[in-house]
Length: 487
Image (cartoon, rainbow, N blue to C red; front, side):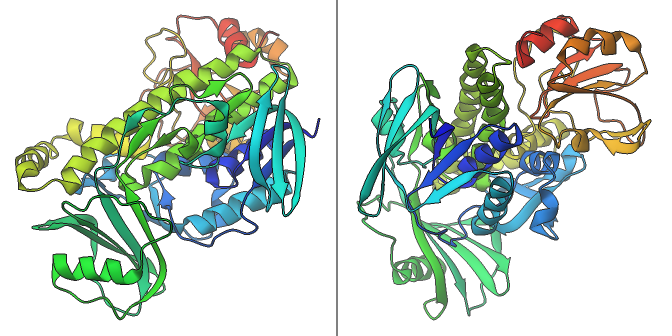
């Protein structure tokens, strides 16, 4: 075989998955149609949960000094993300081109084989392997792998070739986007609803501004390429009365409110991740971040199956966990679409939501939803408040010195934290030491909410709590067997 896994697409989702697989020692080939990165800004920054996940792999420092913010919005209504607390605020103003550069560098350092200028043509899943036909220049070849993962975006050729259903709703409107420099634009970071539609403007640094315009009643057309900047400037002038036509347009694009999700994320030996699995209005930058999180969920599971330490049924939890997250994503972006793009008839809804947001519980709920920190997976019954949720950064003192739960996840392995120097959980986990790290440590500094009184915690490689004592109904070996395979 050419590789254990072939990934089609070298965007953020594909590159994260490649890095995760290589971290676990799995050989991987990434095929990408484009011969070089586009350099387009596209997604801008990371939600709180993605920032945490990147830190769990030691990648944050590669982005340099981050511009962080506690400002967010839900459908254009401002949110204060500080209500969530935690070590990491959201990171703003990071062009997707930078994200892809960092992630590709990481994946290549780990040994990923990334082949640019290779276009996916067709596939055949025989049940034992996947044969993938690709074209590089005028030469066609067939690659073979045990699994194929589609990370090739919303128009995924792999998804179509494999016969995945992709139900949802058609686009009802089109929005135009441009990154411009050379003109001063008043900031409208959360968007502004005007009589004729919606406009948004946000500084990106170095004199660059992103503007987005959505004219009410603008029906989506069949485009064969990006819109002209003049189209963007014309709509901007109609909506605001301002003239930005003299600006230099660095990048121009269009997007719609089409909403779709694959009925299944796995068919045999073919899996979907990122936009290949779900498309929606890109409200609040959740699309790229959810795509990255898809791959952080899939990577360690696929690696465990390929290493033979876990049964193939572990891959079923990828669909059950991330499909539910995708459904919730589509629901919240459709709600935001109504708030952002609706006319005067939606104003009463905006007013009511604005009245509710000063209530802490409402603010926390919406802030967690757009930040990716509200996700809770089904890891079994129990009363522990963090069971199935991500563990916020926990500072620890161990025999080896100071560390953190975040740093302990850098290897991409599971971690059993013994927080009271109790030999019982260590003995119970001894047979799984080939695939998890067992660490005894004492918390220091602030303890995350819900962790008080906890004596031990089992973390999956993606940082989610698979078991905790006291509070899990399953015993520790049952949890270890479920997530890391039989001892």
